Length: 153
Image (tube, rainbow, N blue to C red; front, top):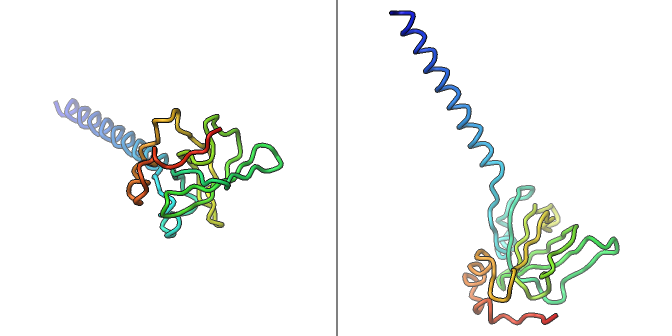
């Protein structure tokens, strides 16, 4: 009888240790892959950490798009009307990317204060703006996002 009880105790201990290890690995993976959304105003205030994966959204500032000679690197400014941040992206931009449009960029802030983006997402039609961008514009006191002038290409 004692041997059977000891086997059950060992089994339960192994199951609990396995469950604990799986939970710890899951929490670690979630912590490592989370990305926080920040507004350009937060960048202007200097409250955004460097070298951490983040998302930033806003409107592409008119006249700020600079395409480099390599043909794949683009630098542009994003604004929420309360602040502006520069984004550098190496790759093909979405077809709907243009000045005056709402976008979300995901990347890391470097020590020069520029976002080095790994991904740039543009809205998919005239009536859509990423929720984070719309909320940031609303919070900064900008007029409704649809009323902000857009460049017609």
